[in-house]
Image 1 (cartoon, one colour):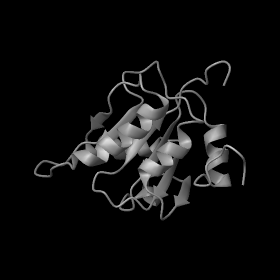
Image 2 (tube, rainbow, N blue to C red; image 1 turned 90 degrees about the vertical axis):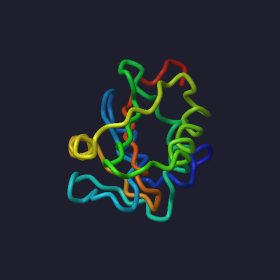
Image 3 (cartoon, rainbow, N blue to C red; image 1 turned 180 degrees about the horizontal axis):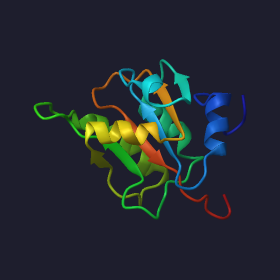
Image 4 (tube, one colour; image 1 turned 135 degrees about the vertical axis):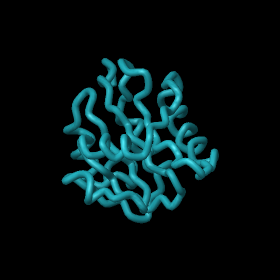
Length: 145
C-alpha cells in the first residue's frame, strides 16, 4: 500500500491512469457492461462500485477542460427510465475534486459502446446500477500537482 493512494486502486489501474495522456478516455463500467467484447484492455475491479472508484481516481486524475464535457454516461434506451441517484452519486464524487466540471453528457447506447471501443481502457466494476457506466476524459495535470 501507498500513503495517500486509495487502496481501491490496484497496481494495474494505477499504471493505466499514469500512462494515459491528455484526451485519452477510460470507462468505469458496471457489472453488466460487455467490456471484453468492446476493448482489449480490461481491468477488473470486481466488488467495487463506480462512485467509490471515482473518489479514488479523481484526486489523481485531471479531467479535460478543453471539451464541452469530460464525463459521459449512457442515455437510456427508449422506454427505460434512469435512477437519478446514480448520476447524483457520481457527480458528488466529481464535485469533491473538480467542482467546475461541466454536467455529465448523455450519449446514445451504441455511441457509448463505440466510445468504449476507442477508450484507453475499460474498468469492469461490481456496480449493479442500471446505466451505471461512465467515461472519463483525461486532461492536462495542473502545474503544482
